[in-house]
Length: 513
Image (cartoon, rainbow, N blue to C red; front, side, top):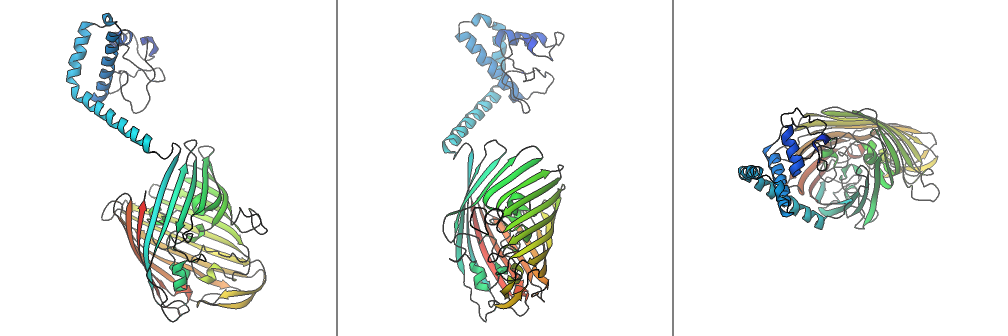
């Protein structure tokens, strides 16, 4: 039977039923009709579901029965207190007292649970940051070093260095479905001019860390993003600053790998370089079906700058179309990106790869690019997964003139570039990882890849392939701390076999709150 205040996992209970006729599924010929009528009319101990049903055939646990019994006893106590004890039948009272003794253990357990819940609720109310906003914090500390003569040099210029990056992230929801994220950040993984310390020491961006983009210990707001759905199948993402393709679509790399605080330590190994571009703008995500999602997005490099060759449409930009299919144990995505970079801001590979692949015509020449990429992963079991990505780049010079073009040895040559000159590059990687290996939250993994390599060019191409080989092991100390040793090797750095092999070692500790 159903008793007032009894717990239910599927529906909330309505207000007290005052007449048995209010219960649409209780009929006079039901065997328990008279008992229900008595409980309702004499003691007011019965409640129904919001749709006016009682569901008398539903199974009842002893805890639910105990909760209902306790409600009836409380109701009888109220009747006695208000001098209406003549309504309380002595035989019924004796029966209820006997039941109270039989279910004493359950009643005691329930009261204990209620006390614990009330204490937890009080603690949350006192300690909560906001009713609409969550505050997340992450601190990364890392000890790093490289080995091997600097690209273009005759000696190793690197030293062991210790650096830190901190993030405070505020996430607010106003409807329960939307989400506004504002990030504050500080760190010292870069030099005062903004260049990566480890890249400057080795002479190549191929050695960069996954988490080395920071503010030289200046507190900044590098990221503002707002997500809001308009229907079950359509949602939008907008942001004035610091949102990239990774923030408007899924990069189809396991989140355990792509996370810069707890995933793979190298920048190259994070995910397909196609997704490492952005600034500010917006995107729409359309769930074509439960397994198929299409993203269309437009991001300007400097949308908040009103000066010429900047702004939302007058400066550098990137536009994306990305189709992702999700299976039970796998996902695959096909992406197309078109971008444009004015002179002085050229970077078509997101800071990864050789200097020539980043700016195939030099930084003085405005450059457009088209990239096609495929990325995906497959989980063979909860403890073994494989992921891969690859792509092809078409770059076009959008202006003419002499430009300083990388020579692959840490220097540049002044070469003539004509408007319409083209260059092509390709890239790819395959990774294996083993979630929870050796303990819950642990993550060992290996990755082998080919950084962007300029294969055809009207100006300068690269004859050798660089190879990236990496291994790491994230050790989960507890829910808030992880320690990750990582090591990777760059063969033929800057796609030049004359350069010494680069070895990078890092010990990262991450604190999440």
